[in-house]
Image 1 (tube, rainbow, N blue to C red):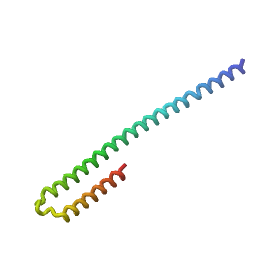
Image 2 (image 1 turned 45 degrees about the horizontal axis):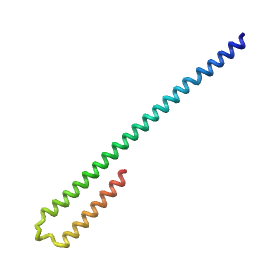
Image 3 (image 1 turned 120 degrees about the vertical axis):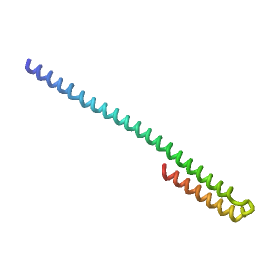
Image 4 (image 1 turned 90 degrees about the vertical axis):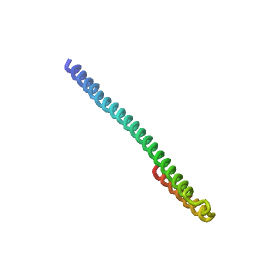
Length: 104
């Protein structure tokens, strides 16, 4: 009789001992999944913000180049001036591209 009682108590302690551990493990997995989802969302938002920023910088560069050309007297738009400013524009585009790659 006492032997059966001891066996029942041992079995009950094993059965109840695993339940809290399993529950904690389940909560940990759920929390990790929520953390991964939040990280993915954050990275997506960052990616969108960075893309918008670089698109705006490109628009600003294009507008500055267009304004520079438009403000010039057409008779003073010599080949040397056009080549020089095209090179500067290309260098600025390269810098924007490098900045975009660095921010990813």
